[in-house]
Image (cartoon, rainbow over all chains, first blue to last red; front, side, top):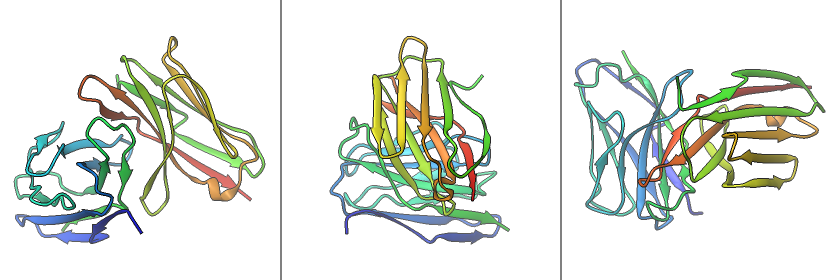
Length: 113
Length: 109
């Protein structure tokens, strides 16, 4: 079945550690996105990629990094520079960057201990 | 003030009731999405609107571009409709999404 997968579902991190969240899609979509969701707030865009080997900062990119070496993969690294990383992280994709319908993955909940 | 405001933040209804969730926005948009987030966190797209009204099963979405307002209606609500409903607008040449904070709907049997 086509879709977006994220792993792991839950992730625990010690302070000072970097962690990488996985996002894979087999929809052949060009564009991929990472969002952060905090309680009581709307989703906020961290990074996006319009096409393979390209990515751009979103609204809250500080403390995060991404790569887009393959079309189907868009991993997000939460670095130790991110001061408040505990949140729910959602990955999404769309056919093209200007295609308005985005398809979301199931999300990864990150908890810093 | 947030660019996208949803009301109410929380809504509890009895099974069978007609439900309305509202979304107001303060910026120019090209389209508006209604999304459903299940308790496990996964999000599905319900509607994308740029004008008028759309219907899918028991769900109806309307948008009034002049008033910068959209509503999501659920007829004959059911406990399985319990979820967070999120409004998101498409704005600017970058066509990025700006999200509301969501409405938590609980439908009691």
